[in-house]
Amino acid sequence: MTSRLVCLCNLVDEKEILSALKKGANSTSDIQRLTRAGTSCGKCLPVIDEIVNVYKKEKPKDQQTELDFG
Image (cartoon, rainbow, N blue to C red; front, side):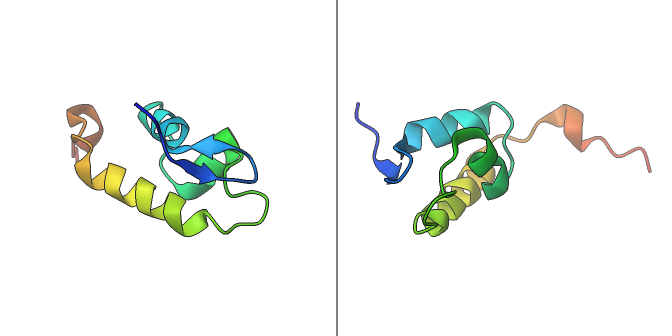
């Protein structure tokens, strides 16, 4: 399976971004810090934003982080 290249400047593909999200990245700035995607010219930032938003919508909720003790 091939993965689309998201950040041409830093050669970061969608698979690498999804891997960072699965490891706990929670925002585009997290992705930038972990993969360097979007840190050069910035043209890919809207695509990274979209990948992050779609992942967050589709990711199963972690029951441990949703406990409300209030």
